[in-house]
Amino acid sequence: MSDGSADTRTEIMEATYRALCEQGYADLTMQDIADEVGKSKSLLHYHFDTKEDLLVAFIGFLIEEFEEKRGENAAEPADVRLREFVDWFVFSPEDDRAAFHIALLELRSQAPFTEAYREQLVRSDELVRETIVGIVEDGIESGVFRADADPDAISRLVFATMDGARIRQATLAEDGYAAAVRDALYDHVLSDLVVSE
Amino acid sequence: MSDGSADTRTEIMEATYRALCEQGYADLTMQDIADEVGKSKSLLHYHFDTKEDLLVAFIGFLIEEFEEKRGENAAEPADVRLREFVDWFVFSPEDDRAAFHIALLELRSQAPFTEAYREQLVRSDELVRETIVGIVEDGIESGVFRADADPDAISRLVFATMDGARIRQATLAEDGYAAAVRDALYDHVLSDLVVSE
Image (cartoon, each protein chain N blue to C red):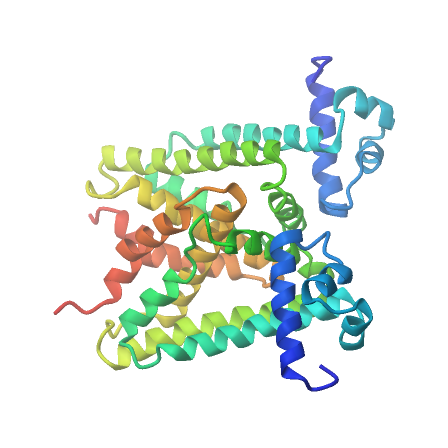
């Protein structure tokens, strides 16, 4: 942001979230976002040249939010943190996250053609994977998880599984799908990580 | 198809596959598909009123292809069939399936707004899940898999995981991602199903 105003930036980012939920990605215009912020389109263009620039910043905003959020439960034991992390992918039909994930999926499908999106999504991907690796490593170190657990493999598995589950629930409007996949993941993978008393 | 010609139908469906790989979904026109078939746009419109109708038929074509393919290895032991099924989600960077999965992802992100897409995708989803359930049930019956294996849970887990892996590889252009997830799935879930000698 060129004027350094954190408030304006946050306002624009939150408006972008709402506009994506309402309009989806493909049909979204700078005017829609300006309307949602309640400011002029020229003010929006003062901060971002194009819709693409704005959305690159928006993915950056999501990444920052994720970083903040993941610090919140740092004092909890690793098995609790892992559960909370996995639960974060599960949403209910009333949640506006279904609409948001659809918009995000549209944006993700543009990543092969828009290098700036791809770079941000790779950053986001790495951050999520590192977060899971960190939780599993902490769990091994603190004796909550088995010493022979493989943090990289667990991280890949948890992320691909819950991302796939979330996408299927959002696109097929199938309530409870992500929760059912989470339960299968607990029963077949995560419960096996925990050292039994 | 109103003229009952299976050849014309197959030609149009194969041309649609190629056109989706080249153009993606959003920018695809009936003209692009007509050009790819090497026939006139009016001939295409004789068979399908709209691009949406054509793509609904195209998902139906993919479902038929899947049904044919899944019959091919019916005589193999269940553990071999499960491996082959999971491997089917893994593709190399040279494969045109990366481009195809991107186009399919665009189409999937339209499912909440286009009921006819959603219905076909739900059919496809159910077919894939039933296929995995069938393999696991056969494996239990034939003594290859543990008697306490849960076919529904395994089916959900395998499908969500490999779908998520495939999407991440295609959108982030990350070679080997799906293969790495598959390996983690084998090590942490599927190897545990098999009754040891």
